[in-house]
Length: 425
Image (cartoon, rainbow, N blue to C red):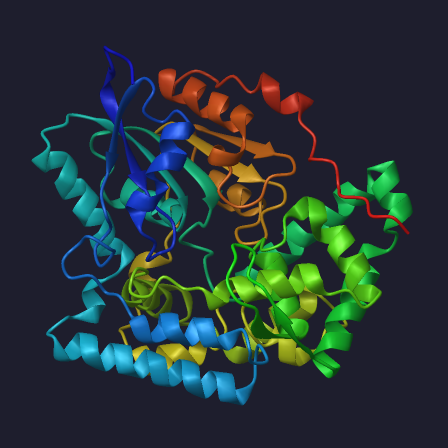
């Protein structure tokens, strides 16, 4: 950090919700967030190192076991709901009011933090759920905010279960379009959209069961690779975007190892770290209410026509979420939370074209009512852009140095996605 840092620090709002905020510090430091000013990190309520910590070891153990089950099987649903109920009962028996864990209260905590630290102003940087939180904070507590930067944007107004299919389609389609624009990739892997549809349908009809070793080592584990699992591996970026066309080509020819290893990765869980209690309290009070199973299925059909309904019935990354929310049972907060943020405070919006979790078009949703906003798309980058892109880091530093002036975005024009992996025929 500079020997004479700027007087206005940056406060960080982590994604998730439920992630260990302090795990993100190396990425933030490597991205230069504290190069010219102090960086403030606070664990969101319910997260690791906060009191109480809303961990659900039961759900971690379920996730480890789920790699060996079909993605949307009734047996998997029963195990998940049992884990959810056990965790909820344990937390509430300990006197925890789960309705107190939401984005409104989370934003109020950050407002209280600035006051407690005696800071007249600061800058806000949040990614993924942290962008949802940052926009809520901007709407409810604009005092003392010098500038806001949001990365991989999830606008509060449009963050619902059905919109996950829009983001999945946008990110996957961008990867395929980039391959089609690269002559070697286009020649080696023609018709990727058709190939993916064929493989999703084939695996959903006839799942593969095999043993695979997790990418970070460990004993081989049994994994089931069906259509739902394949889609969620793509949405999770479990196979790097540059390898996706090659992995699909291998899958077509009976070599599913790249996807199988990626599926096996979830068998190794750090039990008791992730704050599932915060995740579910936010998802079930803010994202799921007001949408039905039919809404979710129809959104999936619009995004991926021709895919099996069994796959499209589950929100990417959030399987059985409506059923989970019936068990979690927290009040509907959509009236307070699904609100558009209108602001003239300088805002930088950063998106990655390959983002399958919070599609780049969601930035437009947020920008419409942020009158002094600048939107930047970084080609070939997925979720959480700044740590992956030196250009995005430069743009962010330029913005924080002078939020009222246009940020230096010259580097964006020379960017292209990383070359795709080409395997021999």
